[in-house]
Image: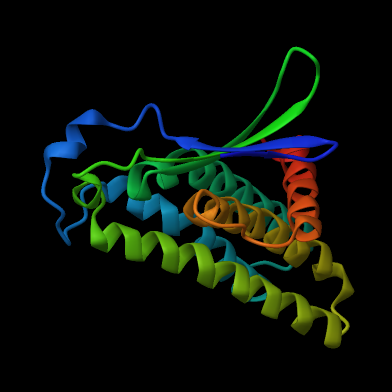
Length: 203
């Protein structure tokens, strides 16, 4: 499916480089990619723990802020480029064509009679639980910092909302974009602009 507006192209395609060897394996609840599953949660959970305990662990706000931003950046890269492809067969990305036009691509494994056998149920649960729960926590932290007047932490928690929210939006588009419109055209446009701003600084 290909939809476009005046600024960007958004494309839903099949994941062309998915591991072929997984197609003949039965669907199981066991974790088939333990390293990917570990790092899918490690960076984002570590960032939350450091944020909650930083004032107890260190008196330096700069050191805490840098540590959290590094963890969030590693999480953004790992989830966007590695764990989504391995754990659930999804990937989103952006490229610029020869005319300088931006194209957003949302990929999923090609549907086949064996599609239900290519993804581990346990890995799928871990992926979506981590992907959804952590951005919600950062939103809560943002409101908490705002209402408690911890202004210096607002930049940190907003970074958490932006980076993890970008991956959440991208993977939801991968999951449902090929079957139905995720939102209205206005919301879709705002979402693509949101992803563009994040990608410019963090890809």
